[in-house]
Image 1 (cartoon, rainbow, N blue to C red):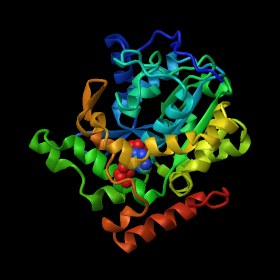
Image 2 (cartoon, rainbow, N blue to C red; image 1 turned 180 degrees about the vertical axis):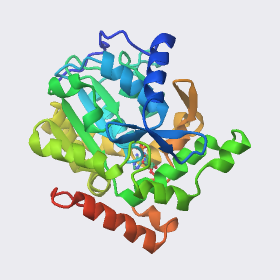
Image 3 (cartoon, rainbow, N blue to C red; image 1 turned 45 degrees about the horizontal axis):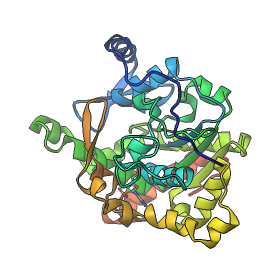
Amino acid sequence: MEFSTTSKPIPASGISPESLQKYVEEISQLPKEKGWRGLQDLFLYKNFRFYPVFLEGALHARDHFQAQPTDIFLCSSMKTGTTWLKALSFKIATRGQRPSDDGSDMTTVSLRAAVPHDCIPFLEFNEYSTAVTGSEIPLFASHLPYTCLPKSVIDSDCKIVYICRDPKDTFVSMWFFLRKFVTGKNSTDVESFASIDEAFELFCKGLSSHGPYWEHILGYWEASKRRPEKILFLKYEDLVEDTQLWVKKLAEFFGCPFSAEEKREGVVERVVKECSFESLRDLEVNKRGKHEKRGRVIENSAYFRKGVVGDWRNHLSDEMGKKIEVIMEEKLMGSGFTF
Ligand code: A3P
């Protein structure tokens, strides 16, 4: 399948100050609870917790985003391998295309020139028109729970890839990632950021960004059982164990399987290698680059911490590990899904 470089004809990119005000007001009416950052609350929307920056975009997408049946969504809760999935999907979908030398064209920019988050946009950041698009397959990403996706995403019956990760590693990754944002800000913000023990207790109660984590997983898991041909469900740990297998599955799911010739020429292996943790982490753009999301500047290196399975053992006690496992078992019981 050929991938062209056209963009989606959807104009909204960013939220106008008037719309933003409307959503800020809507959010202010929602129930809220203490989040991990003392100065910022988590808001309850459709049974999930959100920081306002994600929710403002989600509400805008709810009202304005029009999915096409050919769109493909890469969905995930935070810190479950989104960046890696984006890199792999981008590489699979644009293989054979020559990136423009100056990187000026978003649709042909290479992973050498942009962090994967700038290659495949997040719905919640209202980057509807910068999607890497093929003539038939535009790729989007979202951290939204299944039930919070814009109605048109469900109604259009477009494809979804969902990635999840062991909750212990996800929690540890999230704590380090979010703590990074308060470092360097005013001291009240730094001091008020939850300790790892405090954040752990909140996470176990479902009080985390896009939490409860188990409900996030269950929503997509149940949907994937109902529509297996449209929703591909994968685990970070499985992707680590056999990346080549999943790269081939992803290509098939996208409708652009690797040809026998490509397989002979080692294209699958190349995709895996170019998207490995070390390869991406060591790219200049990811070592020193920054990108901006709705006025917040994020260092690209924040997305490449360790990339290993089981790092939780270095930060949580056995008892804490057991506690999350028991909670997950209980919550996922009867669903047919286990870690
Ligand atoms: P750690 O913090 O455990 O290292 P997300 O992309 O959803 O924000 O998830 C980030 C996690 O994925 C981080 O985990 C990060 O190091 C890991 N990661 C990023 N790129 C990766 C890659 N190419 N291969 C494996 N893991 C990767």
